[in-house]
Each structure stands twice: as C-alpha cells, then as structure tokens.
Length: 220
Image (cartoon, rainbow, N blue to C red; front, side):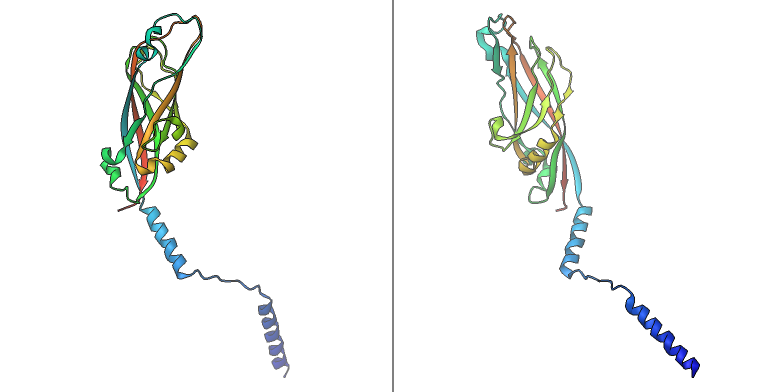
C-alpha cells in the first residue's frame, strides 16, 4: 500500500513539473511566403555581373570660343563657362552584351571608374577642373541631371590620363534614374577664370573618357 502511495505522489510531482514548463509558440509560415523566399534566394544566387568599357569623346576650341581676346592680356577679370556639349550614350546600341538584358533583367548599373585622356592638348593654360553630370538621354544641360564625378585640372599641353573622382551618392542616384535605362546623356561643366592682367588662353583640347561600367543582371 505504501509503495502504491509513493507511486501516486511521484506521478503527481512529474505532472506538476510538466505543467510548469514554458510554452513555446511555433509559427508556421504560409506556403506562399516560403515559395517567395525560395524564389528570391534562387534569383539572388543566379545574378550575373557584367563589366564593360564605354568610350566617349568631347572636343572644344578654347581659342575660338574666346574670340579675339585669346592670347591677349585682359585688363579685367574674366569668368566664362566652358563650351562643352552634351554627349549621348546609348548602351543598347553599343553594348549588345548589356542590351539583351534591357527588358526587366537589369538589377543595378554603375560607373566604377572614369579615366580621362587628353588626346590633343594645345591649350596655353591649364584646363580648369570639370564636373560630370548624367541625365536623361534628351538632356542638354547639367541642371537636367545629377553630378556623378569631377575631373581635376589638366596641365596645359599634358596628354597624361587621369582618373575622375566619383561621387558615390550621385552615381547611385544616376544608376537608378538613368543608367539602368542603358541610354543617358553625359554632360560636363567647367568655368575658365583669368585674373585681371593675365593672359587669355587659347588652343584646343580633345578629351577621351573611358567609362568602366559594372552591371548586375538576372538570367533571361
């Protein structure tokens, strides 16, 4: 009889301890969520990086732009915007390896590097620093786009290649707004400043810009 009572007491203690254990909530994900997560993981794993180089060229004749004042000593301070045209860039036509992904398969596009080479440089003064803007394909002025990089001043007569300084925030915005469309405008701006008593420069310059483009795409 005593053994039977001991058995009942032990059973009651085990039951009490079991009831005192914390409850663990188990949340079951809906099947559609599990499918979407799996699909997203597969797409991320299948993303393809593509790197291409795109070259553009711009030329301007500073002597022609300044007219009869070129080569003369100026009695007053001169500040003049440099006459730099907008350059259309159409990667759909020029880069077929990217163009085939244009229909909804481009994840990101960005310019990783811009190398500027003065292929011709007969300027009699340093080329002032320039800013580079990207805008929609129809853009003709910087105010229509976003600043993406700056080109340091180029010494007169120099043909040495230099790297533009990329503006990461501007490039990210341009990548989303313009580059992902694979067609955009490249616009450069700069200002020539000649102090009073200085010589007004002349000469011309041809610039070649090599853009290293990094894109991430998903399979077709």
